Image (cartoon, rainbow, N blue to C red; front, side, top):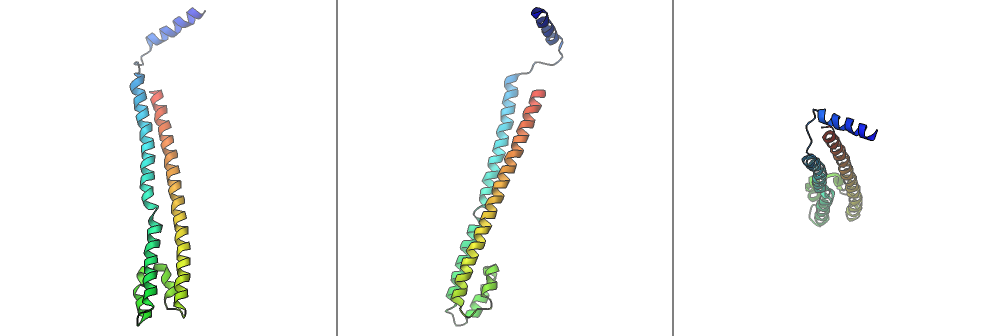
Length: 154
């Protein structure tokens, strides 16, 4: 019985029109595709890392501008000097223009509020970056699985 089933299998293989598959080159192609999937993920992580320091850079620039605003308080016309910084103060300008009675305290309060805003921006950018890397990793895994599946069928 065993011999008969072996002969059937061998005769099926002999009459098959499918060309023999070179498993080594097929495997190398699949490994290459999977490597590309992970390389794509790594590149996305690399590019996303450039976006990570943006809130910090903006916070440092705003700190410098607030320092200039504090120095402007000693000028002959502090209102005009701070108004000249309006574009660089961006959303901090609302707290300083028009100049409040206790300008030093207002600048310090705005400094604290600005740091809190930029910390929230930084956390949001970090979360987006993580989601970007997760989504691309999953998509690369799906792509790799699909390519591997196609290689087995062919």
